[in-house]
Image 1 (cartoon, rainbow, N blue to C red):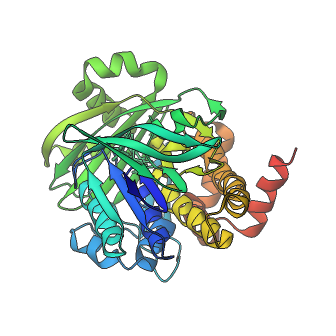
Image 2: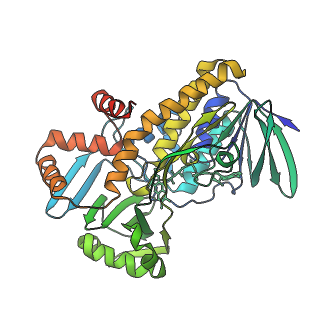
Image 3: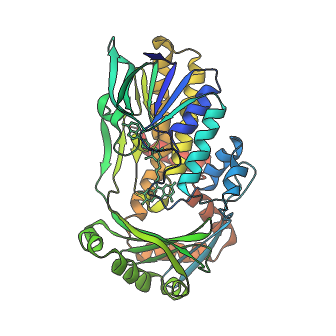
Length: 394
Ligand SMILES: Cc1cc2nc3c(=O)[nH]c(=O)nc-3n(C[C@H](O)[C@H](O)[C@H](O)COP(=O)(O)OP(=O)(O)OC[C@H]3O[C@@H](n4cnc5c(N)ncnc54)[C@H](O)[C@@H]3O)c2cc1C
């Protein structure tokens, strides 16, 4: 049997930073992941400026840059006749976003956790929790055919959309919304493009510069998924021609790398973020349509919030810890709800006359364009948070 203060399940954008920040408080932390170190993950890779600010604060931004992912400082958004160029907001000493390959980013975060003293174990699959006095007191995992039991005062589930920990505690789901979109994406080398978004009726195209290539992602309504999945190349091509003909033209001179990936499991939910002796971080506790590319940045925000809550508890004794974990859950909802709502609105893929008029107004004003760029990145003013808080109040 192994004994730790904290055991974190899932070693990517949510789990690795959470483990690292908790180890930085002098806690003994074990980080487990059933995947291989440096393995890839479905993603269009984009990390908004507030997410990059965390990478900078955690001292890993230079390593992320060294992967070859170029800085992204402007967004071009085209819908019908509207072309809106929005600058990235300045957050934490920089205005760049990045889209590093997930294998690279997650490995960098894992190494940073290790350097902070976290024990990181890959290819270790968690299947059970150990309960004592009505709360998790650890877990069991299997690695290379052998079972291990770990005792810990705090169990953190950062194990993604199909979280084992969320199922075992069990965490209750709420604010669940039907799936709205589905997508097909791939990588192209030699494409002449910046960071672009193009919208058509029921369609959305995102072009995202990453290391040595661009991701070109096409989004469709969820109701189209049965059709899309049987011919992903045809669907991708049709979407580009209809919603982003200029991208289709430029793509003709570029080279596709690897296969196209289709993805329809765009769940929208919250799960209770904590209970006595446990907490959820990242997709394990909250997931939304990937169209607004918020999952990585939001996982960083949650890792930071959880680490702050544990620091405020000042002790892992239940009497102190559980109250701070409950406060973490409330703050997580407060911080995530505005982006959940805006994502649900955008992922409907409707082009309404009212929205077009608003976008025209924004495109014509440098101040509104800057505000738009900040809102897309998830930088809200205190007044905007207050409006959301008021809407959340019972
Ligand atoms: C098509 C698509 C495009 C996306 N594009 C973007 C984007 O551009 N920008 C963005 O910010 N977000 C994007 N996202 C969302 C983003 O990928 C996720 O929000 C993010 O990966 C969440 O990180 P996480 O650490 O919470 O979970 P995950 O990245 O899912 O990591 C969970 C880890 O837990 C491990 N695990 C699971 N179960 C167990 C177990 N029982 N035992 C041990 N280990 C376990 C898994 O192996 C995995 O490594 C996209 C998602 C999709 C599907």
